[in-house]
Image 1 (cartoon, rainbow, N blue to C red):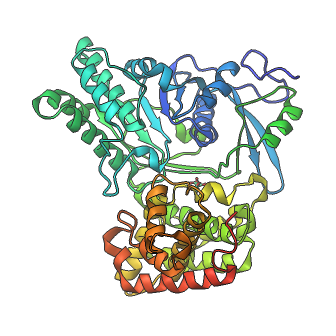
Image 2 (image 1 turned 120 degrees about the vertical axis):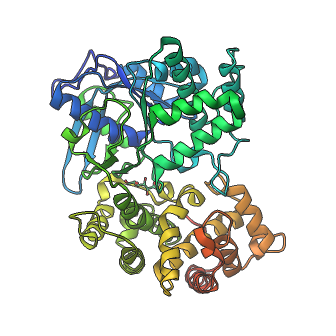
Image 3 (image 1 turned 90 degrees about the vertical axis):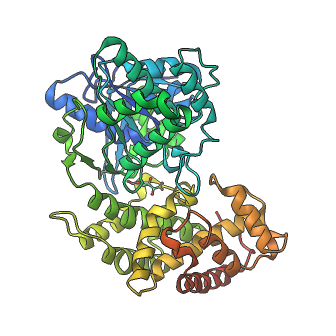
Length: 507
Ligand code: CS2
């Protein structure tokens, strides 16, 4: 067996990573995406400037697996950049350690409170924000954190069963920082930077933190904390982009052969990477612009273009691809029938709804996405991208649909995409398999109800109408618009007919 990669036993064949002097960033949700994106920008900024204040304490969400991958390696891991024709390997040392909150909540809270910590960043996925269908904080889901926040505020020991969600953990961390600031008579400003694929992501998170404080500490009790949040904490918006699929065992073996040491923390990403960040920081930050990030006052135009064009098309490819039996996004985009519908969503539906960011050509951007999706080297699966549809679709297709309907047009590509999603859900329900979505059980019950108690008896077009109208899915009442519902129903009849209703299961 080969040795494990470690800060102290680095392979000589790849440039050495940085070793930060201290933690400056707490990152909530240290999955593959963060390690292949923001951590790489932080690493490159440190290399360019020599500023070593920006070590990252990564925090996992539900499981300890990333901690178990990185802690034995002193935080160091490699990034395999997988292009269609070339690959390259880099070592990243920006992550100093990883904490699993179930066992180390106190350490996470204390690190957020430290004066040397200037940023909390997040990639916890859309569902990690624990919202109800109306978008408000789901106070039942985060009840444990709210109780702990109350207890900590009163100076009691929180009966800690581990945090129940990122928003709860973040709010507790901010409250700990507020108390430390009061104790030391300083302000400890801090920036909370969300990097998840949501419209106006910073504003959404700011509101959810406020809702958590209001729920746990209503009235005068929470006033001083609220004032500190308003005066000392900023929540910039950001747009992040890099295709980073789950790492496979085969890729780990290949990299082990190349490096001569075993890296359990390996992540794989495409060559393209982009980060547009709203320039609204409460205190110091790494010089991410040295690594190619764009700091701007107007993230919204980029955020909307990326969500509607890239993520919107990605989801269409994932659902339609699964129905056609394609395992990867690259296979799906090379299927001419699916590609034609992807182009329709991109160029006929989404493009007319967008304002191009300064200097950008969104048609060329759309074409470049199709090339990126066709890169077979990342191995991104349709199954992975199709997860959590109810959490993603509102941002990816919702606003396109609303704006096209308002302009008197029926968005055909988006209707096809909704039909493909509905068909995947229906077939899972018929097969009695769990739908990989926080609202999966609710949708399964819905399919059965449409079939009069049996999913197998539900007609695809009726399921599609019901799912399109599901509360919280499409903004502005678009899910009830008869023009859209008729278009989705017509598409699903075709999709179901092509595949033979219920006969074939989704891959
Ligand atoms: C994907 C994204 O899994 C998904 O839903 O659409 O993770 C996508 O790969 C990234 O947003 C690309 O920047």
